[in-house]
Length: 135
Image 1 (tube, one colour):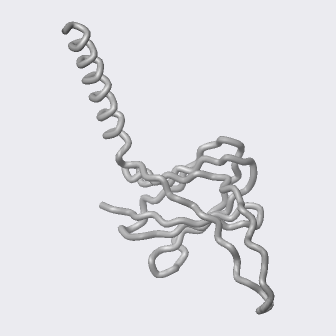
Image 2 (cartoon, helix red, strand yellow):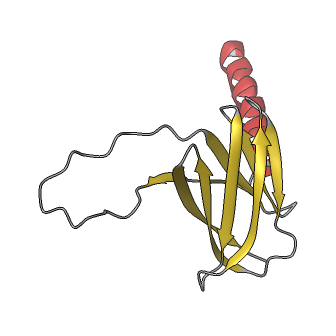
Image 3 (spheres, helix red, strand yellow):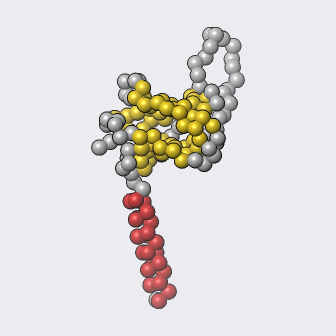
């Protein structure tokens, strides 16, 4: 009986700790970036090879509480980013000069509510993803 009570107490403590950690991170959402292939050139009717798989060298997380995009670079280099609104107008752009595992932020404090698209260029490859700004 004592063993069951101890186990129950440990499970309860673990559950409360997990709920606390989960609630502390609910304002942060990952922005899924995917590789964007450029337009096909030359109207070539021949079959072509499948595009190469490119590793996405950054991770992007939306922090709604601080109204920032948190960027973690997984490689050294220069990352150019463009953020588009729902009307495909550029609302923000810039260059992040990153070092391996460096963390950077993009301020979104002046953005109105809506859906946005971020495009990041690195070594002539473009990666993009959408995120939503809420109240």
